[in-house]
Image (cartoon, rainbow, N blue to C red; front, side, top):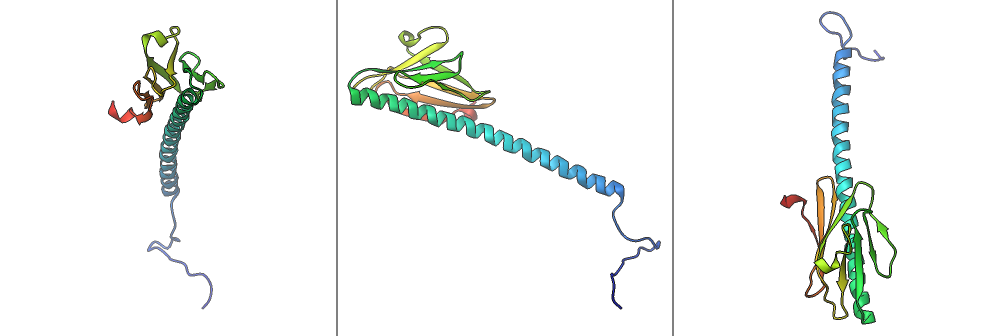
Length: 160
């Protein structure tokens, strides 16, 4: 005998899935897809903050290097209202949408209520301070040592 084999239930009906069973499976797949989408979105947001803090740290290090190489003071400014930062000889960099920036620096380096700066000197030292980048619950702090001018980056989200 050739041909497809069929399983028959005791009641004589072909075996298969009911509409209710199919809807339950589709619902479970939808819930799983939504959970994965939320997880991926949060991971991308975290990656954006990490990338932005890395770029900010690189710009600070470049400003310090310029002060050492040229033998004069160089300034790095942060505008918290516009969510931008800028080295005194560079272009203004705007943070991605939804991200906020803050700065803590010496009182004499607070240009106005929304603009602060960190100055680097020819010996590599600086006025020091830290810049905070935040998006939702993710927060990164870029710190500048006043004594050495060294720049470090730390994820402070988990320390809250």
